[in-house]
Image (cartoon, rainbow, N blue to C red):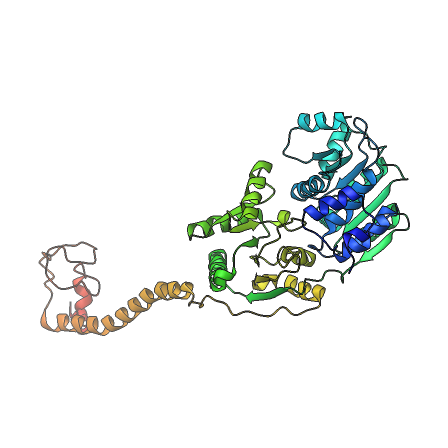
Length: 472
């Protein structure tokens, strides 16, 4: 078995690795570190959770061990798609350079420009940044990239999804063509292939797993769910989620719940807290300090459930996540692989469950086609109830039916009353009737009988027979 000591890394880097508790490199590390130390371009393709960060951090530190940075001119550059991933790379850098005098700068949104500029002005060996914030500093004239010797692009496929490819191409153009490039991606979309062909020079291709595959350590499942009514889909899905968590019991030590939309992240987290589940949201609209605080609480075990958008789906090193729940089927099949990759890391087992509604079945089929595996169906833990809409409709129609039946039954009785009235009572045409001539349905004077026929104002000639009319 290969050990880190066999990879020709700087002795001080090896010491830091040993102190971190690592002895043997992962396959992507064993494949990428040797050619990177030789100064070659590297194209690394590996699923999330395989140790890609160390596969470029360790050789980069060894290459930069000699030399000194100049003001505003970083010696190396690491591009990351999200703030969280950039912060994680910075943490790795700090851990592995503890015995070396190398400096770094972290350029991400949510932090003051002045604070970042003050660090850059002193000169840094490693610049870790998101593309947008890096270009902001460059356009302000605070950054010069002509001295970059090593450039790293991490999670390139995520860069593509987030629309950063034009920024990446521009940044490549700002760096020397003699630079060394380390390029890492979980999948190789045609656009990613084009960039590697354009900006990498005879790269050593390291592919440690079939593209877009899920770890074999992860047990997968899906609940095919249909709401009783469309406007109740959200609340019923949240109930299904709570029951799924309840079924796992103590095995679910912590979990990440992924939603497609930021609004659903907030609603789901609030609902879980309402039902006694310790949950907090994280998405791109929250300020950086809040996101960092939430992630730290989840890593330390203070927070049990993290409800997240895809901002947390890639690259975050949270080693002990027991479960991942996909509240929504991701719109892009590749995102499913990255979401569930938050569990089952470092050889540990994990479990993931997804809730699929009818309109998401097309995206679900794309996921199964991508991973080339049928995801086992799980029975809905919530017993479906009869739709209340049908009851409401019945309630709305019953009064009408009762009225119709009452009218039908009342008609023959009224006919009998009219006949009896004509037979037993002869109208007096000379004397006006003493009864009220009101058109109301009831008899206000309390005669006790319901008004039938045309009421008290019935003209007397209508009650006469044909012969009586002729005689008159």
